[in-house]
Length: 258
Image 1 (tube, rainbow, N blue to C red):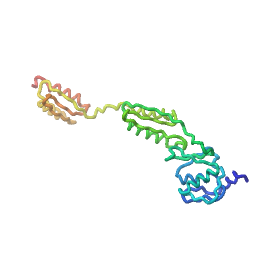
Image 2 (cartoon, helix red, strand yellow):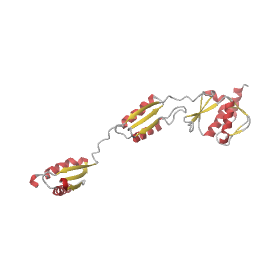
Image 3 (tube, rainbow, N blue to C red):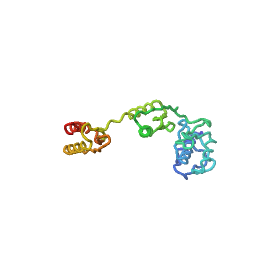
Image 4 (cartoon, helix red, strand yellow):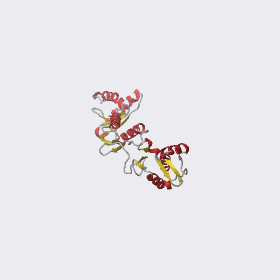
């Protein structure tokens, strides 16, 4: 039986390590079993350079316990069999490992594309929240070697820096951002502060007449403050009711009421 056939027979017979403390037995093992031990130690998945790399024979001279303190030893065992594990992503905080036969090779990664988007109405922090929510949905099942999109807000320039793994993905997020960066609709129900400068009556008298007529009308109240120095009224009123109040003021603020 050749070494590949031997490894395959061992692979079928022995269970993969699936928790810390499991033992890799002495002997020639298939790389898939040893790499599973690496995954257990690091807590991260492994992507292969090619599909059959897990069949590579790996020689374990002594039983090897799967534990964090044996990580270097496990790496040496893999290296001696011509296998090298490389971090995918940030070397300090990788999100996966890539195994290759080439000691100097680096994990293949998509070339990022970047775009700076200047916003007209949307606040950058709110734009980031919208984009991140969409990315969490769209990119939750990315390939191990893919790149997550990144969004950075620049409040000073009112812009967002977008970095994506492909032009297609970038166009998708640009469309999401464009549909969100719209002028907010006018809230006709919200309060407005209006100023009425009295033409014929004293502001205090006009305020009393307006308040009485408005109370007789019933419905939503308004707040009126007299500004004596300018002989005017400051009126806080729901925006959609102002035309009605303005018409009433025009009727009351007449010379015949002086």
